[in-house]
Structures are given as C-alpha cells and as structure tokens.
Length: 439
Image (cartoon, rainbow, N blue to C red; front, side, top):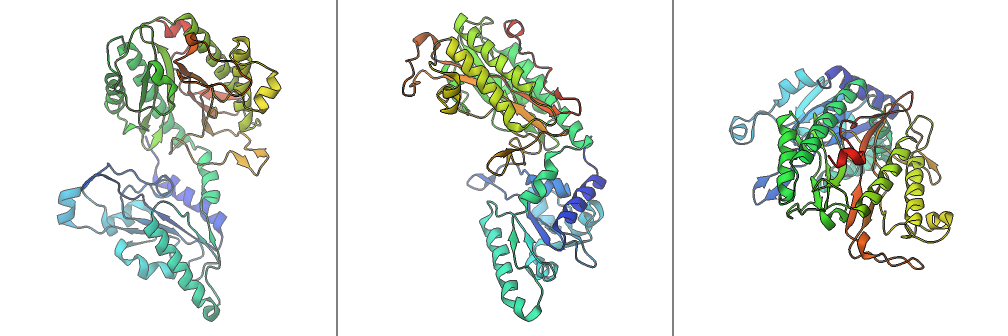
C-alpha cells in the first residue's frame, strides 16, 4: 500500500503544465533539534514528498519544464560511509536517479553551481518562502543575481511567485492511492480510540491513556501520532490544545481524546468525549447531545456543490439554538450569530482539510466572499464543540454561567470524504451515540 513512482511523475507533470515557462523549486524539511545535539525524528516537507516520495533531509527538487534535457532535477546528500554509520543510510546520487525518476541528480553541495542553469531561461521562479530562512536567502540572492544580468542576457526570471497557490489545489483532491492510505490511517486511529475508551477508568492518569493510544498506532503499523495527542480529563477538556496529559482521572468526569495516527505520511484526526465512570451527569449528557446534533447536521452539509462555510454555519446555528434553550445565551438568534456572542462557548471553526498535513493544504476562501466549493475527493474534519471553562466570562449582555455547567468541555470529530453521492465518514468505526458512550 502506497504511492508508486508513476503517480509521483503524474503529479510533477500536472504541476509543470501549470507553471509553463517557469521553474519551481522545493526544499526538503530542515532537521529539528530536540535538545543539545539530539534531533527529532525526521519528517519530510509535505510538498516535497508529494512531488518526489523522497524522504531524506538536505535535498532540493527542481521542476524546469522549459529545459531541453532536464525537467525534473534532484539535489541530494552523496553517499558517505562514515556519516551513514552514525545517522543511517542514504540513497546517494546514483541510486536516487534510478529510483525516483529524476532526469538529473547532483550532490547537494553543487546546488549553487548548477541551479542557475535551470533558471536562466525561465520567466519566473515558483518558490514558497518557508521557515528555512537560510535557504530563502539562497533563492532570493540567486534571483537578484539573475535580475542584475537580465539586461545583458534578455532572458531570466523577472518575478518570484509563491508555489502554494499552484501546487495546493492539486493536493486538495485525493487520488485512489491516497484514499487507501487515508483509510488505513483513519482505521488505525479508530482502533486506538476504541482501545482507549475500554482502558480509561477512574484513577488512571491521562498519560496512561495516551500510552495505549500511541502504542496502538505503532502496533498497527503506523508511523506514530499525526500530532501531539490530547487526553484531557475534567476541566482540561476546556483547553483546546491541551497536551500535558498528566492529570489523574476521577469518576463523574469527562475525558476528551483528540488523537490521530500517521500512516505513510497521511493522517487521521478523531475526537471523542465520554464519561470516565461510564455514565454522563445530566448536564454532561445535555451538552453532549447538543454537540452531537450539531455534528450530525454539519456532516449532512458535506456534499458536492455545497460550500465549505455551510458546514460551519449549520453547526453554529444548532449550537446557538441549544445554548438559547438552556439559558446560557439570551437574545435573537440571528443577532447572536452575527455578533458571535457564542464565542465564549465555541471559539474555533468546525473543521479543516485533512491529508498529508493534519491541517492540510488548500484554501477555504477564494477571495473575500467566495467560499471553496466542495468536490469529490476532498477530505475534511467536522468537529464542533462546546467548552464551558470554570473561568468563563460572558460577553456583554449575556448571563453568568451557573456553576453546574462549568468545567464541561465536549468535542466530537470525524474525518469525512466528499463523494460523488454525498459523503463517507471514514472514522465511523468509533462510536459516538450517547448509549454507546455510556457502555
């Protein structure tokens, strides 16, 4: 299961069709230091990986559709037996050329010498100014040099364009091979969530649940967590990105788990909230039912032709109606929504694209007013929630929140594929009905 080189080649060809007489440059992810001289496990830049499948650091990919001989060029680390003894094997120049379909492969230390030859006939450079400031400076310096000699040569890149708006629409629609990887990532994520719910009980610590989840990820063949796992009990469930995971769980509390597995670089992202002791309190059950209703109605909006914002708008309306019924908000529903008076209870959007990145590539709006139209092959999360912090302060004109509601945080999240007919919930194997959550 995975992406073969034919698909990587087709991806590059589609991008080269879009850039015409330009040259696109992509840099591998930088290595990151955990502490002192210890590095984090390397994770390739998603754009670079999407186009190449090459999973080593210190590499550059160049697409030059106008070049007479070399349209796809790689710069990689050369073989070095001494360094490989310490840090692992490298493909090297010859093997990289054989395996990854490049027309030319050079050692990375020849980049500054060779790269200008792939730019001097281009009319523009496509490059995303990312976090690697040193490499950003390399590209900008090279471009400035070519601009300085343009009057004498009469050719060369007169503009620098961000590659994201050209590449990311391609990433937004998943291929059949990508969907298989996504199904595997979400299936493993579902298995881990079900394991966690059966393991959680009063007296255990949040980190014990985290350990069971991440153990399952690896046991099932995943690369590990797609993002830092959130295991939030009690009032910690009101902290959106809580990752300390150190508290001991108590009876009559909720446990919110937001965790997903990465498999073949593709990611799952699931959230479930359930009572640690097996039974909701009346207040917990009321809020849970409200969030679940909002999520189910929001998922129903996931279908071709609808816009991305319809999902969020539907969830917000259901949540605001429920908060009005409970007396936690007062006023006219249209005004409450327009003025975002619900924000103390629900402060985030209802979802995001999902794929190679957890918050995947792709725009949500095309200009100020036009929202992205949903198309088959897109995958997104649907994740409404209500968070009633112990320290919640109402906005002007709204009532104080009674103590019985405070400390309740609930989010329910699924990964949803847009299909020709409507949608498919890829994470449906994780229960979420009230009855199932109380088993």
